[in-house]
Length: 550
View 1 (tube, rainbow, N blue to C red):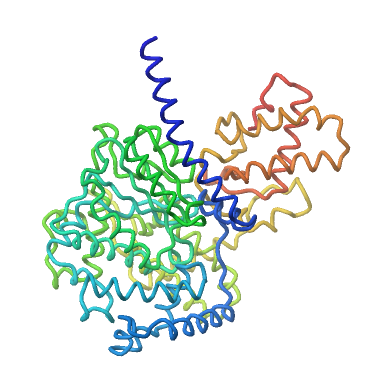
View 2 (view 1 turned 120 degrees about the vertical axis):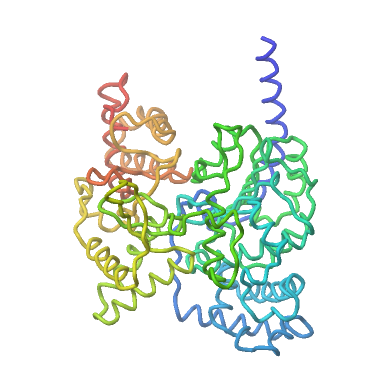
């Protein structure tokens, strides 16, 4: 009884601490328009649609950005950089990066370019203003700070294929604060080499739970914030997880100072490792990828981060130009990393392969309409996107004598052959059932995209006990009485209301492809048909759980 009372008191205390934050989030959402609320919720839960850019509109926005820069640059570091090398500051891809990072607001993009040049000069000096920052520009203390893993890119993406940046405050270790800021600047700009990240944004997590809680009393918080506001990376969602009540209250206070629109994408999580990781998983974040080891008191695992560091060392400097740190030389050069594409006899479930399939899907129409010469250009564009993110193209091989598995990097021509085959495979007919609706399955652009199920998703199949499935059962139970006596038109409205409520809460409707065991999102018409069937089953056999199909 004593333990139960303690647990109850702790829960009450946590709920009391969360209440002001929840109220702030509600107030922030109320200040936004319906469309803005919808967009922020989609960003937060990882269900936002892919952004398509119109070339004519982009050109107009870039001209507007130039006009704003002309009015803002007088007497700034940006003007000095422009005088040093106008080609660097006027480069279209450079300016477009800021436009994308500010959600296509020309004025905000111009203001950020001014801040960016100020920050770059402060961290690296005037001589580096019009140069790309590489690892050669980091000193020994900067690189040591980078290798601590206190700030790192996870090997997996979220459910919308966005990269995840995680901060482990308990691992922070630097000689001077500038060492940490330069390391963070380098990581930000490395991620932005990929157009996909510029367009879709990234996820940011500060994980200060247990032994990873902040030990430096928030040293450099203001400088870190200024850095993030100067770099053109759009954070689609920001999560702070902590087990420290004092830290939570402090962050809740700072939370009130955040602009309403950004506050809508900000979430604070209070609890143990298990509680915080569960809360993160509800936002489409694969917590298995966090650099923690539950079997060893959640001791940090840095191997994936060190592999990322090594790939960047080799990409920026080359083995002959720069000596790798001893902790990186022992890592296998061709061991697959997060953004690598791995080819083999069977379909491989690897983050880089999932990104490749997404690229194939988005570029398939353009590829099919192209001539033979232009098809190669499309493949070159895809290859460049993979490599810009630090990815390689590997193939599995097995040693005949030792039977050990290894990886070899493919030549450019071999990669072209593999990708051409992937485009041909994509054109093969899909087997989406069309028993509901008149061909509606083919009209849904998300129907053939392979995804990873999340806790809020509804999984079609037998004996599925996902949280999303339980939510559907509850909704159907609440509406079944009205459904039984409703006319046909009203029944359709009720089934649609169930579908829309699940999507509003961040869930999707998924089915498993028998041939590959992968999950794919189904069209709304297919989902409505399934929900309608469950209403009917509920009426015939109220004591059963929808015939075992949810």
